[in-house]
Length: 336
Image 1: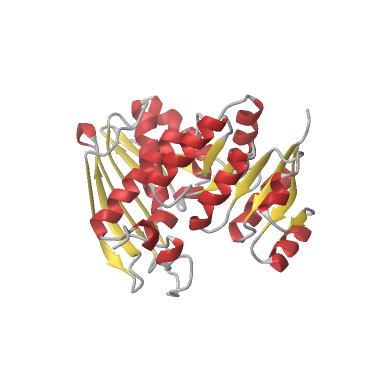
Image 2: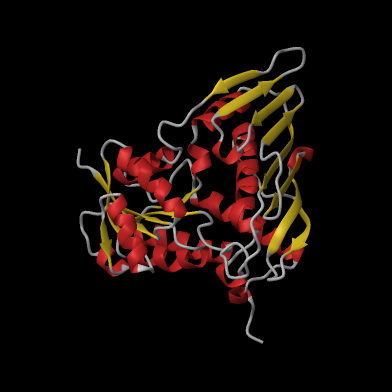
């Protein structure tokens, strides 16, 4: 079978993890890299035996490239995704796909109209630990799901120019890390129920950074059947950084760090906890990379493991949480 060839836009820190996985996967290769900083792009390309190109147009003109991984800052995603889809190149784009649900709907419509594959890179959904947890939830191992709790917090020095705190770059805890809390809450309910509905109620309290973005968020999502999800995400301190799913007959835990868990733990009354190791084969990114190849070779425009509707549903919830906090980015505000 012909090797599956990748291009890359945005050679930052997370892109190195992608490159490590894609260059070790049999039948995959990284061919070209594009970045805003020519020197940085050249160094990245040299590190991973790829070519540094001057712009996205040069990458899209390469007929040998099957798919493009986009890892630029949040506000750069939309334009790059749009150009790739219009050029017929399959896309794997770092989360969040774009800063809000309205923009996501536009790109999903374009993907479907062009018949070109598009997937948000929510790598957690493709980890072995979550495959094990899904089997438990589908089997009813913890009984009826009643609640989900999670945390994702770390301390970052405040810098108004950094992508974490700059409103013009769609900064803030929710889009950068809270997306995992929301997405994996929805994943748990999807695994247990077959599909996850929109929350009935969204509540949030938090602390805003001096730049106006969310620095710390404590949120509650209320779903049908009385299920409540509570989570905290923050850029100003630590937390347990685990995900717990509580049921009428037990508890399921994806331990720290839950977004990159390498084991799953099942606890039931009067029984010793059952821990199932689920290590990465490379670095955890391999699952989503292989999913893109499978879908593209099958002629799909979306992944059943990370469908377009799920990307939009998560962003709808994040939009609602930001409204609760009073966070609006400059590019979202109406003129005047």
